[in-house]
Length: 210
Image 1 (cartoon, rainbow, N blue to C red):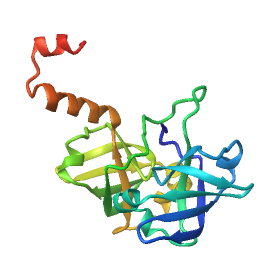
Image 2: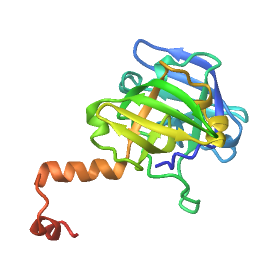
Image 3: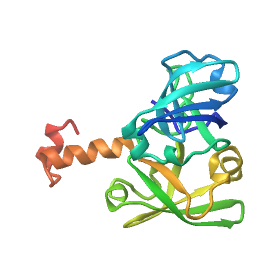
């Protein structure tokens, strides 16, 4: 489990590509401090398992399903990536619940500056936007962000200068791909409604503990 608060930017040092898999070697500093083999690290929002590490880098495997479902296959040697270690039980919870399981890959349609903010319009599927709410949370490339505007197949997020400078969004351009994970709590609620009832009634709420 992650929070969507990026700890540092890493750099892709090596990519060993199989037919449908990838082994990534990523240069980093902060996330390696207390690292162990088997630990989880979110790389551009994708939960990956550390297979080996040194004082300056770590290696992780990307399985076929993850290659197909995320934007990691677009990475190249020298690409910069967002990194976050799994949430510590005694740490501050600064973002929102982020699982590291990507729902889909979106496309940046428009990037524009206004005052001290930068707005991104991101194309998504109707299935993803149906799980979003205005002022709700969404993870874009692993970054916990607030939805500024919502349309049928597009979300708009607004970021402050700190997020622009400390994450990969500062490098992103119109047409670039991003990993999208909608709010985990919203997905559970939607599933509950789909499997049990499509109508909210007093009896339904009581039966489900509300």
